[in-house]
Length: 263
Image 1 (cartoon, one colour):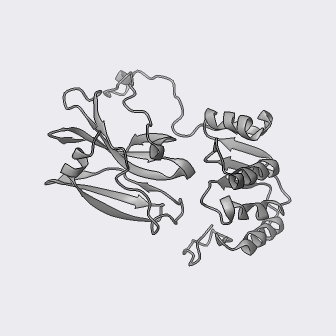
Image 2 (cartoon, one colour):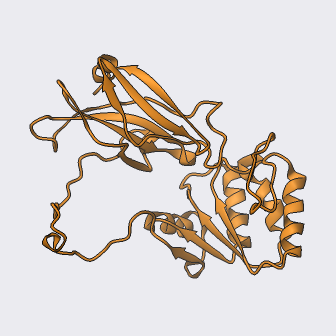
Image 3 (cartoon, one colour):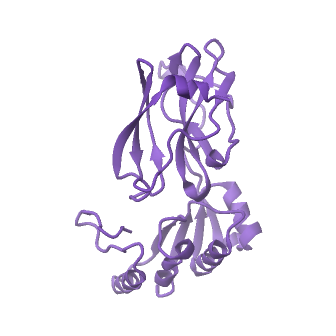
């Protein structure tokens, strides 16, 4: 999948689909059929494919002559009519559906009446591993965890996590966070923890610090801004971040403004 001007992909990439060119989806189907592929794996996310609600993808799937396994990165509980139409046909044309959360599996059945036998759950993230005595590795290990925050605002409703280590300020531990909202839109936010008791949340931002703008939405993983660590220099907060997995940049903000916006 590529945008109009394209990318310089390595030789291993055999075919490119231009996002908004319906004919290129049909040519991709011809290419796959002639390649004698055993199965086609589709990574589905709203916002990647062209057409209303990504409907251009259906033009490819309708022509394929092999099984289709579709991984659903977002399952919407309240889709628009176009989103519902696309999802229903995608479900029909897929041999198997993979979702990454139990909630997603439930919504496929409740919202889209998907047969349970057609759905496979492959959890997102690190698998649950059996406990190993930390003394065996001579490591310091925390045996318990505690939830500090849960999603509250629309831009973080699907997922909430930290972006790097906490930073010490006079007001508390400043933690840069990432939030995932509708259409798998990743934004960068922040919250504040008590210096003496970091399990106590002192404040959080109602609105994200950084969200994908028009020039940052297109890329290998579209509609995403993400950071793995920030720093404080003087009274400025410096946040390096990646844009849609195709480029990096950084933002600088007033530390006092960020702390003052905490609720």
